[in-house]
Length: 400
Image (tube, helix red, strand yellow):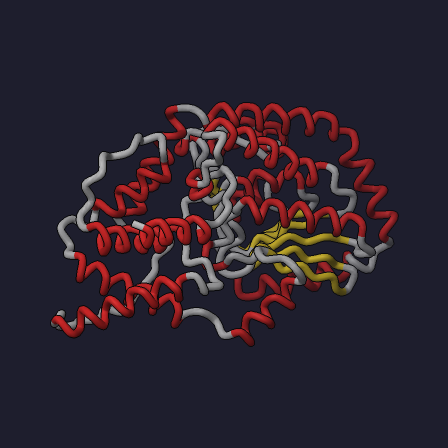
């Protein structure tokens, strides 16, 4: 039992801190298949490996993700206690139910086989860890950020979302780091600020695993804290004093789409898509989109996106006014950055003052809308519709 408690504690330490939101990202992890003859001698060795694996798990530097951690938890419980015999938790306790489902899915798998599978899985995770040299290089490029790459060159501050393996899905940590990066960009000597994504996606929206990190205060506190963080996050974009440009390098979902109405220019590759699946997830719009989208594209088009979850292409988004210009994917980066460097040579104060004239008249309204949207979202996060949608999402993921 002490070993089980140790593993559960380890799993909790490994669990990423996540914010409330709605990403539809599904993560697939491949592991080597090892066939072993389970002799008595092998089982004694396997028990030794099992103990070593628990220690190796503590040394992992890269978070393996919630799906893998659930698998580790389930295999550990099966290896130490046998098949699941505990009562099924309440459907509203997402964390306990996810753990129970993972353990119960192992059925009658023997303790010996579970022990071996646990060891194999840990070894595969250890072997896939980046070298210390590569880690040091990555840390330098991130300049103190774990989920972003932030650089300032040629009078341009670039904030790059940097979770490419998770399609740049936004976690609580990422929200806070973006807020910090935006605050610093507002004060530095750069002329313009650019937001883009690393990898194939611009951003897949909020990570739905955010719902698994329920604080001691329960779901109510989680919803309240999430609403406060979101309002602060959006406020930083409303108040940003310099030209703000989105370089949408791939598909965009949720908050990464709704926030675009607060940018001054939006450039997109022709393979980008824009999707706001709020109704599907029992939620409601944010990022001031309930005000900006009807203003930008007209009420009928805004309704299609915000109410009925329509995914639009880059060309459609450009026609509707959400995107400034679309570029061929093959030449996207080259063409866009030539323009951005030219913009960055314009007089800094003139640009900032001109933006103030253009945007300043609506600031009060935008802050009001932001507050109302976050209050509504807080209500939605506590609703049965939202909880059932999130639960359905996790159940779907567990079958992948």
